[in-house]
Image (cartoon, rainbow, N blue to C red):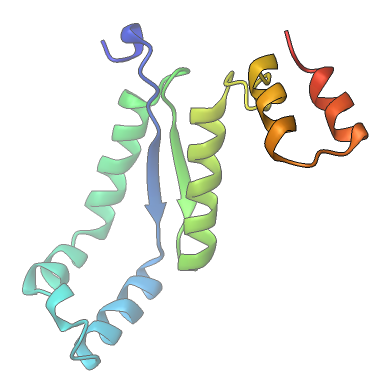
Amino acid sequence: MLHDDDTRLVKLFFHISPDEQLARFEERLRNPLKRWKLSYEDFRNRNHWDDYATAIDEMFERTSTDYAPWHVIPANDKKHARIAAMKIITDTLGKGVDLSPPVIDETVLQAAKEHIELTPSLVESLAGRTE
C-alpha cells in the first residue's frame, strides 16, 4: 500500500555477534550512565539467540521485496554501522531525485548584479543556466 502511494521504504537490520552483545551488556553494567539500558530481559532473551535467528531469517524471507528489501548491516562497529545506514538511506531516498542546482531566474540575476560585484565568468556561467 505504501509503495503504491510512492512512499519509499528503507528497512535496516543491524546485526551484532553474540560476543559483541555480551561486551555491550558488560559495558552497560559497569558504566552507571549506561546502566538504564540493561534489564533482566536482555539476559533472558539472550538465551533464545537461535530462536531469534530463525525468526529473523523468516522475517527476511517473508517481508523483503524488490521495492522494499531488507538491508543487513554488520553492527559490531557502531561507527561503521551508522555510516553504512546513512549511505543506504541517502541512496534509497535520493534515487531519481535531481540534485543539480536550480536554474537561476533572470530577474534574480539582474537584481544580484545591482547589489553584488559579480565576475564576468560567474555571470556567464549563471546566464548559461537561465531559462
